[in-house]
Image 1: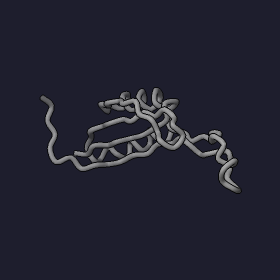
Image 2 (image 1 turned 45 degrees about the vertical axis):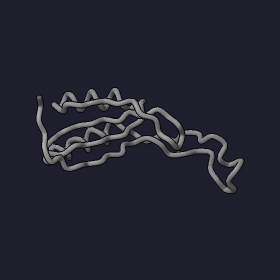
Image 3 (image 1 turned 90 degrees about the vertical axis):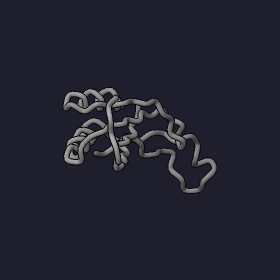
Length: 103
């Protein structure tokens, strides 16, 4: 059994959660905030068997698309810095679960 932690942009969360639940995944959805751009994120918690992880990755690659976002005035402080930052996509952590029970 694995616990999957997935961090995605709020803009991608509705489509990602819908696609994951259609495939039979049970999800806990948490509202979170990223520290770098202080933007809203969604963190998903999914308990699943290891053989279903490729399906999760497939769904996320279709529903969580990266974008370029204006970064708050970094170029004013850092020479040769860009005013744009690539954001989005999904960050996924796969953790081993020693024990699992539904009570």
